[in-house]
Length: 396
Image (cartoon, rainbow, N blue to C red; front, side, top):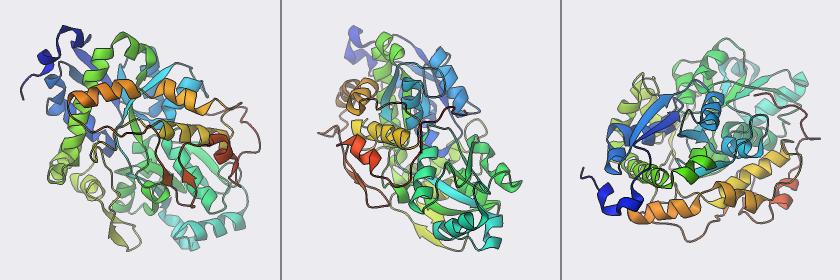
């Protein structure tokens, strides 16, 4: 690949030559791995130094302290850190969205013995057994998986705060926890739902795209301080990730990428377990197989990576819904602080990536509610199941 960094001139030269970027062993780290291994980073004058982390809390802490310059992060986690929910408060930045779709909700196989095969039968069992008889895991209290899990449970009339117990478990440990019955269900990114099926430990009851088609998922996150001090580096990182995302989204490259990320240095899972859902080929573990057109996407003609303000604002509405906020934060203002729309537009335009005309988008979720970024407080108040009060303590 030709080095095009020079053509941007001295003023665009990255301030840092090496950029330390953290990631979790999940399928959606694919574009980061591709950007590094295929040298898309070097094309823009930087070298991505990947750092595999053991938990989302470790990623949060290392980004906040500067040990990592940026990271593959849960969308809601970035917003949680910015607001100081349950941990260190630090002004944060979303440089771009890494992917849409591709997470899942699984139930432990032992629940089949009680007649549970879907959300409705789970709700019947939960109500029959009484409060907190069952335990469900997500990966981080303000993260995407917590919000998908809560939304899905609530849509079946299960209050995730009072009817069941919820705990935090790192993604690679989900299947083991289901195997030893520490959890009865979980929400996690791939390939761990597929791994649970392959190991006959769990079965799938929903994908995250069932909850919200083409939802925002992981983001390229950093502190606001990093962006302010290193705008050229941040732009170069975005450009490398855009090229990598475009490469990953080429269907003919998916098998290669699945094999690439299966390595023990990255996801450390069998290639076939990764590849199936990576290509949109799903099975439930209950005999059902299907192709999901809303599989994990990284580019989609520039629609995926754009940091829509409404995407970030949705997580704020869910924080309000589940008692994570003491007061309404001023949704559009917070999103404008965090989501680096201007920086992203500069990077995208330099390499001819289409940029959406609007900073808001409209989506319909599984319960028929439409989210378009308008009237966020009214939207948050429209749900029947919600927290009774603001949480006194959030366990991370």
